[in-house]
Length: 451
Image 1: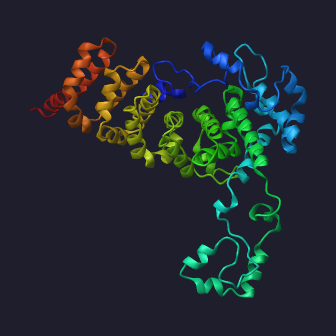
Image 2 (image 1 turned 60 degrees about the horizontal axis):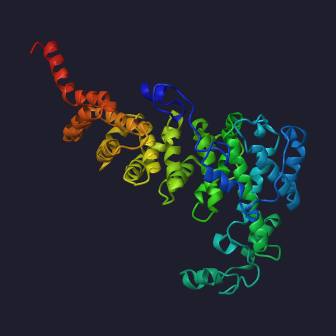
Image 3 (image 1 turned 90 degrees about the horizontal axis):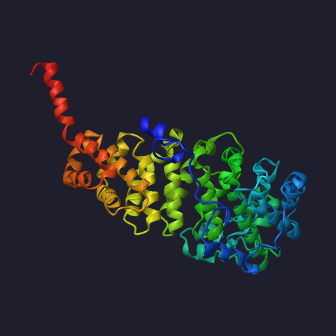
């Protein structure tokens, strides 16, 4: 645990406690390739959300109330202007001196989240949500005409459904709140396809702004403590199979950036809740992303788990999923994608330091040691990944119960010891633990007991 406390602050390995690196900067803020900059300069106008704007650095200070009111108004022209403005303000260049603490503007973060919530409310067609409706027309008929004929004809309680009394209908009507009719009924006021597309586009733009906010250190503490923000982004990744891919990616990268400060207990705190996300549901959403076939998603999910486990308060919520996490991360190490290998090794590096049980389970996971050795032997082009893989093996060999499993790899350890000087010290310690520790204990026992 000492190495976990000293060397893993901020999710980084090594002796220096450097802050956790971000998964990326807003497009154009780093020195990318010439091809990338060329493509950015010639993006088709149809893919942009409105015209290009030039925003002065003091614009946010002078117009912060107007921006928030424009987001809250729901008017298309005002909403588009506010989203364009915030996109540019949150697009931070290295040499730019514009104000970083945009999330500190009163009501701005909640207004952006409301844009996403408005899209989430209409994201799925009502016939797919299967919400309960008040049926006053044809309530005594077997087939009501409300689209649920298959329930009435295919169930075993047809008599109960067809025998509803007027009293039960009146009771249901009394419980029904008129304010919910707008959302629960398929009426004349539903948005058409064009309106839904515009709502979706605004939600994606808002999620991109929130993602950009998460790159700014001044905003991290505010966003990690905002329950509405965390619930919204976790709900987006939870519905990754049906939600817009760009919206899911923005939400996932936001969580990864906030992970070093994220405490999952916030979902059971006294702070007001909007979506009722629980700790278990949040971890299950991450596991869904970890099992995704999309490389960007499962790499980000692996990195997220590695950062979450740094906080000891998150351990009780992650421990029940460790067998699944270990299995998936070991699978990712066999992936030909170097990014996936690096993400898996980085997550296992932190997970192996949690407790003895984690090290025992990881060592007994099939192919775990083989694939760690493969990463070192290949070798992975990033030396830090190979170093972390060697450190994982050293953590595993520190448990006496793992000795029988790891002794089978003694020749492989010795081969790396003599062939690769970069990791010779680590594998020398591994071989020492495998061969010398039992004899040392026996020698100590002989001295104590006079044998």
